[in-house]
Length: 337
Image 1 (cartoon, helix red, strand yellow):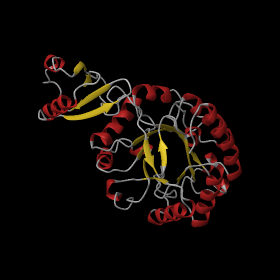
Image 2 (cartoon, helix red, strand yellow):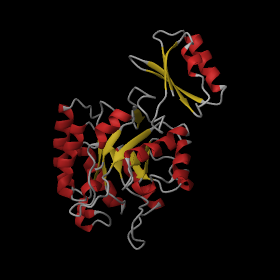
Image 3 (cartoon, helix red, strand yellow):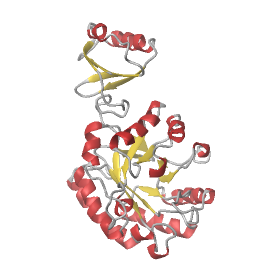
Image 4 (cartoon, one colour):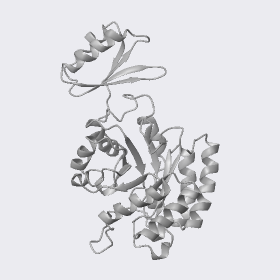
């Protein structure tokens, strides 16, 4: 439920209204936009007297939100969410590229890639220290040593780091990671999502391989319901009957999410198709659709990569892709800081 306030409503009366609502056991979310100011109600609103609310001097209207996600809903939060991390702003009007290897393999590999992607214009370093794999016999990442190498690459380049957290038990271990990534396989790991909701860390939430957009937004809701509103949505392709590519990039998810939610949306073109040469055209499509950034896998020697080499760009390929990305982002009026 949302309460739309009258323009220039008396602040004292608004505060009294918020206190009255909270005394009924509900949480409130105050959102002041350029054209409208609302109070969002979270909790059991079935007993709320709508007529009484409408009679309040400061209330213009009362509306119920039919969608099950509330905090992630644009009607609950009309203004776009902007998240500041590592001196960068993520959200509408800005554009960022998170680049790096699928998995951290060695100090030489990671630092070489990190320095190169920074020169090419990337603003964040992505890399997997812990790697969930379909096969138990595949490379699972360097784990704690991988985190240490990510910290070293950040020290060397100044790039904030993005890496995947696997369990709520790892929160202390990931305390100095800049953005915590929740992978597709963990999108509905509700214990993890609840734990992340009690942190103040930005969370990059990837869409599950077969998840609907509503299910995805409900996963974001788990994090936001705990008090952490720093959620970034990442579309990485969904599984379909097609066999010529790894996943199908749902480019329609970008404008749909922008309509339904206020959260930043980025695209992972590497996992979407699983083919390196498709990264550039899918990146162009993402920018045109209104995405707020890209997550691209880059390796100094993709043929020797221990994970996902087929979809990884080499350093020169990434540099060329970035030229096109920068040109198109500028055309769309996006700021790449």
